[in-house]
Structures are given as structure tokens and as C-alpha cells.
Amino acid sequence: MKNYAGIIVGLGNPGPEYEHTRHNFGFMLADQLIEKAGGPQQCPKPVQWDDCIVHDCALIKSKPHWLVAKPLTYMNLSGVAVGRLSRKFGIAPADIIVAHDEMDLPLGKMKLKKGGGTAGHNGLNSIVEHLGTADFVRLRLGVGRPDGHGPTRDYVLGALDAEETGIANAVIDAAIKGIGILARRGMSFAVQHINSFDAVPSADAAENLD
Image 1 (cartoon, one colour):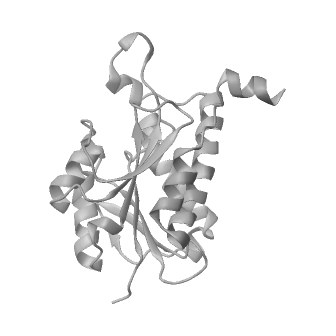
Image 2 (image 1 turned 180 degrees about the vertical axis):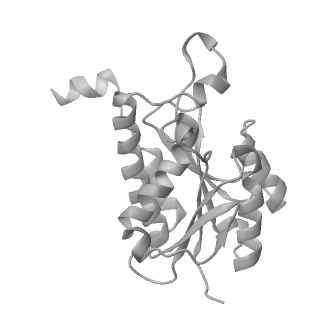
């Protein structure tokens, strides 16, 4: 069986009604990873399952390749596909990167960390359950919280507007660069790049540029 460096999992919900929602930030990242690695022709599907789309990608133009996966079970059951991929390809949880929306970070920011809690994120809860451990890498993609403490479910399932989409795309570009750094140089260098990035500079920073 072919060996892989690891799995990059983008979390989201399948279906056109969810395509541009905050909860699908992970799906957006996975789609762009595949495109930047040459698209479906250069990233073929090594397996085809009902619960997952998974591509075989040379993310840094070298071997071993990475698997880039999008679970299709809806967010609450994401761990079903992740657990199956881990077992089938013999990939340890420590070599799995899960990209997901994060309300505790503002849109424009992201954080890379290994292990820790799930903050009630249903996709992460499912992955912990099916891997039997929280010892995997999280790429937390900030989406912020609703104004006025409104319903969080409606907020994360709401669509990004044009301005927010531009910010999200900038985050995705920087995240992909960070994943390349992780693959080439390791976790600590990737953390420095990813955790310091901000697609929405503060007013003070903007003034210093004038």
C-alpha cells in the first residue's frame, strides 16, 4: 500500500446550500489545496467512498504525498470518515491536520495547534470519538461570533458576504503556504507563519503604514 505523509481534512457540510457558509471554511481550504496542487487530474482519488471525498496530492511537489479529504457525512459525523482513513492508510492521529471554522477567532485570523479541547465543535467532537484521541493537529480558521449574541447555529450556517469572502480567501492562501512550511520544515515554523497572520490589520497597524 502506498505511504502518505498525512491527511489534511477540511470540515464542512455537503450540498450547494452550504457552499459559502462560515461552517464550510474547511471545505473551502481543501478545495483550494487540491486546485493549487494541480486539480483533480494531478490529485486523483485513491478511493471513493459514500462518506468522503479524498484526493492524493503532492502538496510540495515531492513524495510522500498527502491525502486531502472532505467528509460528506455532515459536520456532526465527520469522524466516521477520518477514522476510516486513518486506519486504512495507517496514518497516526498526530499526522492528521483538521481545518475547521473557529468562532473564538475573528475572521482574518487563524491558529495552528496540536491537541487540546474541542470548544464544543461538533466536527471535532466526532473526530476525537472515532480516532480515540485528541492528539491531532487543528488549523483553526476564524469566523468570529454573531453581533448581539445571536443564535450561533444560524451564524455559522450563514453565507459569507463579498467582503468576508475576500478576507477568507486571503486566509486560505496564507494557510496553504503554512501547510507547505509544515510539510517542508515542521510544526514550529508553520505555527510562526500561521499564528502571526492577520488578513484584517488593526487600525494602529494601518496608521503605522501611512
